[in-house]
Image (cartoon, rainbow, N blue to C red):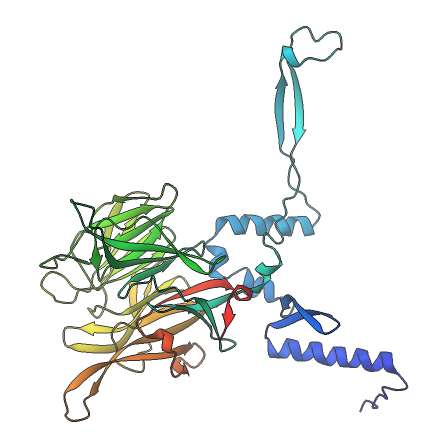
Length: 443
């Protein structure tokens, strides 16, 4: 048994013991710790840290899906590994020529061109491309509705206001790109000066620097109950219903060029559909389920290769459904809940992209429509949706919106409720994003 240390007699040993105990607690708790710089009575946020075992990087960080899907990050990561091992990259040499007009005073120039070799810098500043604020990027659940945009941190149970802009229309669709750019499409505004077409759909992008939404060129084909995907630096608006009399079901696809800020029409879907799910993975866009022109639920899974500009049918869903939750989680497609031809369902299934096969997944605890599925920090979450409840004065069922958040526990293979109600989940679309919490207002 270790003898107790008297802090008065052995202050240095006492402080070292406290430090060791504190570091051990950090390692065991596996939590992020905010570090601050204290100057007299003021504190300045400095950075965040988490103490991890030596093998954590190779077992977790290098295998994270965000790294494996980003060739540029993999390239930079290898550069850092080589640098630590004492291996520097090969020096790139460029040749430049001097013309006769730039010749020096030395004899022998006589109009001949000289070749010079210039060396580029060996190592770029890649260990941290951001300012210090970049260290405070967190993976958050982003809730977007017509009153506010709110970011929820499920690990710390913290909520942050990202924007109080009222520009966001109801019944919109949202998308976060692999570069973490956030877009919203849908809703309407009327252009009275246009004689050809007076109705347009909103298209907005979130600016994290100003915490505001920026107006982008509107979608030229107004629609609702559509899906959004991304590939090859393009954003795709797929299917839906036409925002005109008759509400024709659409098979058309509008594509937005992020480089030239222009809309165009892309290759149409093989079939008209609305209320479907759309996800993107490795430059492939997947269109899942939905309803057709006969208002019956579909079990189709169709993939679009943006490079080849081709649609291809894949293995169908086990359960035909529409208005369901869908997300990419650990390189697989997860769908849960939704509407079937016989009513609401809590059924869930997962699609293995490599094997082109569907398999059953743990059922969501409640039958719902319009459930949102997101993956944040490698964990699967279910947010909101609509469930059916009996009226107070009769046994008739009526839909009721749910504002709760559920987390899937992979170890226990079950869904756990982590937040009973978040008022900003009402009427919201939900995304998994990375934001700088120092720029946000904590609620």
